[in-house]
Amino acid sequence: MSAVWHPFFQHATEPQPPMAVRTEGAFIETADGRRLLDGIASWWVVTHGHRQPEIVAAITEATARLDQVIFAGLTHQPAEDLAEALIGMAPKGLSRVFFSDSGSTAVEVALKMALGYWRHAGDGRHRIAVIEDGYHGDTIGTMSVGERGVFNAAYDPLMFAVDRLPFPAGDGAATLAAFEELAASGHMAALILEPLVQGAGGMRMYRPEVLAGLRAICDRHDVLLIADEVMTGWGRTGRLWACDHAGIAPDILCTSKGLTGGVVPLAATLASERIFQAHSSIDRRRTFYHSSSYTANPIACAAGLAQVRLWQAEPMQARLDALGAMQAERLARLRGDDRFENLRQCGTIAAMDLKVRDGGYLAETGPRMRAHFMANGVLLRPLGNTVYVLPPYCATGEDLDLAYSAIASFAG
Ligand SMILES: *Cc1c(COP(=O)(O)O)cnc(C)c1O
Image (cartoon, rainbow, N blue to C red):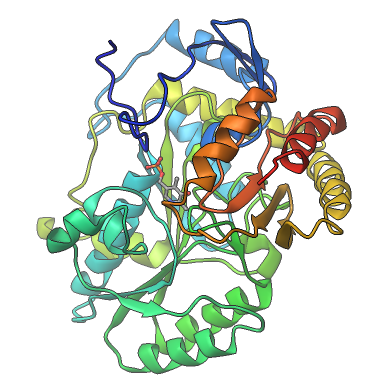
């Protein structure tokens, strides 16, 4: 018996998970000699490929000089260089970088920055607007701004109240109208959203025009926009940031997952100058009192910097375009298949819904699909009845064929 308690895993019904022993490129090798295609980039973290050589080398090199050093009152070159590079690549207007260690902490930091901003500005705004079916992490604060449901019902008494906007389907008119009214109330501190693609909510996609519309409403009513790019960042939607599709810049941007190429944990919350300046004061009560022990870990920062350098050195846009085209081709082949509906794509992400009678997250279809995919050498993890392929960027057409033939052969 193993002492390990796995995440999002039902120990009573699921078999002991296979032992991963080696990763390379788009594949995970297991102790029983199998080679699994990582069709979901190990929960959306792997960008270029597993154990990308430049990133691994940067880690080795960094460990020759530094390990964790306190970041309150000390700084180091890996963090300085990474922060500077991030600001250079981020949407315009973001000028400060706060490091933490996971997507959840990046979002918690963003929420605290937003509330701190309004408090220090002498304004009582404190309400947070969110979008239905959003996901921002599993800590109490991030669950509060995410969708409520079976995953977090037990913790409801600990969660704070937020204002919910409907999912922006179609032209997003209902969402924009609801937000306009809410924003005009003068109570909204910030709107937090996943730009263009809601990941955990079921790979739900909406138009860049809606994102631009929400930004315009934030501008009109002075509401801060927090873009949670934890999943969408680093090329996943076909551009470096999902915000780039709409040509907008948020006031606060959260990044993690692909930040180190999926090799080691690291996160960053980028903020605009006015948010930073509101915390910069001779009044020490305005200090941003937040830290995690491993904030700006030098080894993780070195990995992040190597990941960023790949974007600067490689023809990344061409690579993303090619992967997007390969996904589109394969998705098109499933169009005639009436077992699937809502076929959709945003950049490198392709998704479809399996028509099932027993839908929902607790449906038995999910585990059955997962087992079928594993038996066919592919790691895919449907969200309820939504099947999606979100591969590392090194995935070849042949690799994708493996995933799509496993999907097509699922008997239902
Ligand atoms: C995964 C995810 C998070 C949480 O990141 P962790 O590193 O798992 O804490 C937050 N926001 C979005 C959009 C995510 O996809």
